[in-house]
Length: 120
Ligand code: FES
Image (cartoon, rainbow, N blue to C red; front, side, top):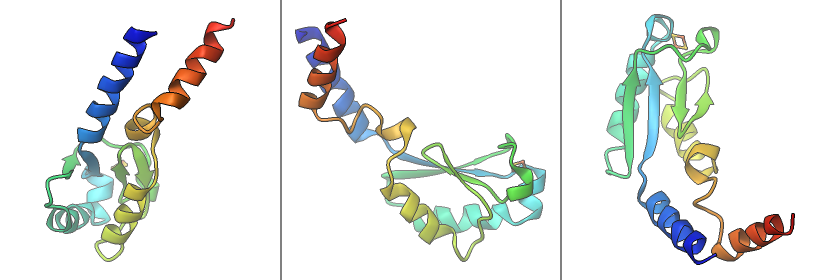
Protein backbone atom coordinates (compact mmCIF):
# COMPACT_ATOMS: atom_id res chain seq x y z
CA UNK A 1 0.00 0.00 0.00
CA UNK A 2 2.95 2.34 0.63
CA UNK A 3 4.12 2.03 -2.97
CA UNK A 4 0.62 2.85 -4.16
CA UNK A 5 0.46 5.96 -1.99
CA UNK A 6 3.82 7.14 -3.32
CA UNK A 7 2.69 6.49 -6.90
CA UNK A 8 -0.57 8.33 -6.33
CA UNK A 9 1.21 11.34 -4.83
CA UNK A 10 3.50 11.43 -7.85
CA UNK A 11 0.54 11.31 -10.21
CA UNK A 12 -1.20 14.09 -8.29
CA UNK A 13 1.86 16.32 -8.54
CA UNK A 14 2.21 15.52 -12.23
CA UNK A 15 -1.44 16.27 -12.90
CA UNK A 16 -1.31 19.64 -11.14
CA UNK A 17 1.59 20.76 -13.35
CA UNK A 18 0.04 19.63 -16.63
CA UNK A 19 -0.85 22.34 -19.08
CA UNK A 20 -4.36 22.46 -20.42
CA UNK A 21 -4.37 21.72 -24.11
CA UNK A 22 -6.56 23.32 -26.74
CA UNK A 23 -6.36 21.61 -30.12
CA UNK A 24 -7.93 23.31 -33.13
CA UNK A 25 -8.64 21.25 -36.23
CA UNK A 26 -7.30 23.11 -39.27
CA UNK A 27 -7.89 20.37 -41.79
CA UNK A 28 -9.69 21.32 -45.02
CA UNK A 29 -13.33 21.25 -43.90
CA UNK A 30 -12.80 23.05 -40.61
CA UNK A 31 -10.50 25.56 -42.31
CA UNK A 32 -13.20 26.36 -44.87
CA UNK A 33 -15.51 27.10 -41.92
CA UNK A 34 -13.03 29.47 -40.26
CA UNK A 35 -10.98 27.32 -37.89
CA UNK A 36 -7.76 29.24 -38.57
CA UNK A 37 -9.44 32.42 -37.32
CA UNK A 38 -10.68 30.48 -34.28
CA UNK A 39 -7.12 29.30 -33.63
CA UNK A 40 -5.73 32.84 -33.92
CA UNK A 41 -8.36 34.15 -31.51
CA UNK A 42 -7.59 31.41 -28.98
CA UNK A 43 -3.82 31.90 -29.29
CA UNK A 44 -4.25 35.60 -28.44
CA UNK A 45 -6.59 34.87 -25.52
CA UNK A 46 -4.59 32.05 -23.92
CA UNK A 47 -1.01 33.26 -23.73
CA UNK A 48 -0.71 32.78 -19.97
CA UNK A 49 1.53 29.72 -20.12
CA UNK A 50 -0.91 27.41 -18.32
CA UNK A 51 -2.68 26.60 -21.56
CA UNK A 52 -1.27 25.70 -24.95
CA UNK A 53 -3.12 26.21 -28.22
CA UNK A 54 -2.17 23.74 -30.94
CA UNK A 55 -3.41 23.60 -34.50
CA UNK A 56 -3.83 20.11 -35.89
CA UNK A 57 -4.10 19.08 -39.51
CA UNK A 58 -5.37 15.67 -38.39
CA UNK A 59 -9.09 15.68 -39.04
CA UNK A 60 -11.14 15.12 -35.86
CA UNK A 61 -13.75 13.19 -37.90
CA UNK A 62 -16.59 15.58 -37.09
CA UNK A 63 -16.24 17.70 -40.22
CA UNK A 64 -19.92 18.58 -40.58
CA UNK A 65 -19.91 20.01 -37.06
CA UNK A 66 -16.81 22.14 -37.55
CA UNK A 67 -14.91 24.16 -36.80
CA UNK A 68 -13.97 21.74 -34.05
CA UNK A 69 -11.82 22.37 -31.00
CA UNK A 70 -10.71 19.82 -28.39
CA UNK A 71 -10.20 21.14 -24.86
CA UNK A 72 -8.22 18.57 -22.86
CA UNK A 73 -9.74 15.96 -25.13
CA UNK A 74 -13.35 17.17 -24.89
CA UNK A 75 -14.70 18.19 -28.30
CA UNK A 76 -16.48 21.47 -28.93
CA UNK A 77 -18.32 21.88 -32.24
CA UNK A 78 -19.48 24.84 -34.33
CA UNK A 79 -16.81 27.15 -32.96
CA UNK A 80 -16.45 30.71 -34.20
CA UNK A 81 -14.02 33.53 -33.40
CA UNK A 82 -16.80 35.33 -31.50
CA UNK A 83 -17.74 32.42 -29.22
CA UNK A 84 -14.47 30.50 -29.00
CA UNK A 85 -12.90 32.15 -25.96
CA UNK A 86 -16.02 31.95 -23.78
CA UNK A 87 -16.74 28.34 -24.74
CA UNK A 88 -13.16 27.24 -24.16
CA UNK A 89 -13.01 29.05 -20.80
CA UNK A 90 -16.18 27.22 -19.75
CA UNK A 91 -14.79 23.88 -20.96
CA UNK A 92 -11.58 24.47 -19.00
CA UNK A 93 -13.61 24.67 -15.79
CA UNK A 94 -15.15 21.26 -16.40
CA UNK A 95 -13.43 18.02 -15.50
CA UNK A 96 -12.36 15.79 -18.34
CA UNK A 97 -11.29 12.20 -18.32
CA UNK A 98 -7.93 12.90 -19.92
CA UNK A 99 -6.75 15.61 -17.54
CA UNK A 100 -8.70 15.07 -14.36
CA UNK A 101 -9.44 11.39 -13.91
CA UNK A 102 -6.89 10.30 -11.33
CA UNK A 103 -5.36 13.62 -10.49
CA UNK A 104 -8.41 15.14 -8.85
CA UNK A 105 -9.15 12.24 -6.52
CA UNK A 106 -8.17 12.86 -2.91
CA UNK A 107 -5.74 10.30 -1.51
CA UNK A 108 -8.25 9.11 1.05
CA UNK A 109 -10.74 8.39 -1.71
CA UNK A 110 -8.14 6.46 -3.70
CA UNK A 111 -7.07 4.49 -0.62
CA UNK A 112 -10.69 3.62 0.12
CA UNK A 113 -11.23 2.48 -3.46
CA UNK A 114 -8.07 0.37 -3.39
CA UNK A 115 -9.01 -1.14 -0.03
CA UNK A 116 -12.37 -2.05 -1.49
CA UNK A 117 -10.69 -3.66 -4.49
CA UNK A 118 -8.35 -5.67 -2.26
CA UNK A 119 -11.34 -7.39 -0.63
CA UNK A 120 -11.98 -9.40 -3.78
S1 FES B 1 -11.70 18.80 -41.00
FE1 FES B 1 -11.99 19.28 -38.92
S2 FES B 1 -13.09 17.61 -38.16
FE2 FES B 1 -12.68 17.07 -40.20
